[in-house]
Each structure stands twice: as structure tokens, then as C-alpha cells.
Image 1: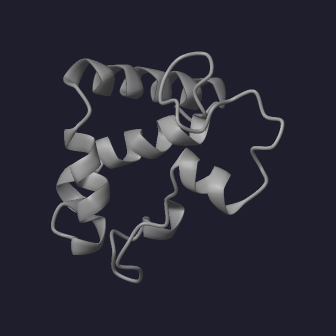
Image 2: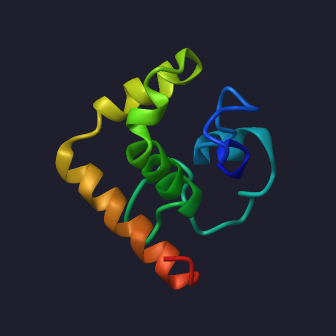
Length: 100
């Protein structure tokens, strides 16, 4: 997400990864109590929550980027109530890290 902090001038796609991607492409999730496919709740993988929150917050800026079409389409499949839960949990995560 930090690699896209210039708004897409240097990089055409934010380098963000879902929990499932991190689980599939690394061994960081081995033995972890969090579930990479869970978005919210006690078992939610923090990266999954923050990833979707980033996409939700920057939807308007990203929607013209064809490289983000698939990720943004997946957001539309998430119910409004679940989106609110994602935003609330992401806010709580940032607050707990002192970056709210």
C-alpha cells in the first residue's frame, strides 16, 4: 500500500496482498491463529481486513486502473453490513497500533 502512496505516478498498481495471497505465497501463516480468508472477527487475519479496507477507502481513485478491476469487483460482492464491519475492524486495528 505504501508503494502506491504517490497515487500511481511511479507504480500503476498498489502493491497490496490479500490474506489468501500471503498464505499461498509464503509460510508466514504456518501455525498462526488467524485465518487468512476471514475478514472480520477474532480470527480475522489483520492483513485481510486492512487490505479490503484500503480498497474500500480508495475505490474511487483505483476504479480507473484496469489492473485493479478484479479486486474492485470482489468488493461489490461484499454486503454493505460486512463492509461496515471491515471498516470498523480496520479502524480498531490501526488504533491498536497507534496509527489511527
